[in-house]
Length: 204
Image 1 (cartoon, helix red, strand yellow):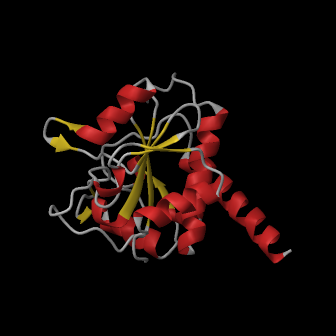
Image 2 (cartoon, one colour; image 1 turned 180 degrees about the vertical axis):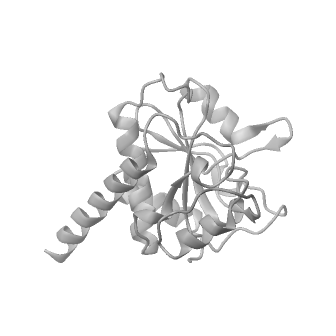
């Protein structure tokens, strides 16, 4: 459990971890304020956009679509590894998910099966949308995967979380498939290794 980072601290946390950050116009105040609470935050949800092309994907995630206004995440991770910030605060990304999963994330425990949608994830999670068609064929370049790992680990370190605070949309909300193309266990192992390396470096 943690208070959400301010826009400036969110940006500094990503940049301090070596992320290539692109600030989209107005991102610091673009949110769904007034449509539900934002925080406390417990973790990070990783998505795929089901779109192609950086500019179109960023525009969609910033502006939203019919019946689902933007922002649809906090950052869009492009195939070249750049993280485009499109919003800060409450965002329409996680939707309603399983409260048992929320309790597991909060307690840093293994995730249970996703069976219900009785908790508002937009309150509790940062969200990153990754540009990928999600068809199992669209490649995940190494630069993009490294950016997902780096961003997730940076927020985990800032909040004192472990890798168990990093989940996929499909692990939160019934019926979702994202992200498709890698396993979340693989990503969590990468985040764990990065956090362990950083701990050794700080201790040394």
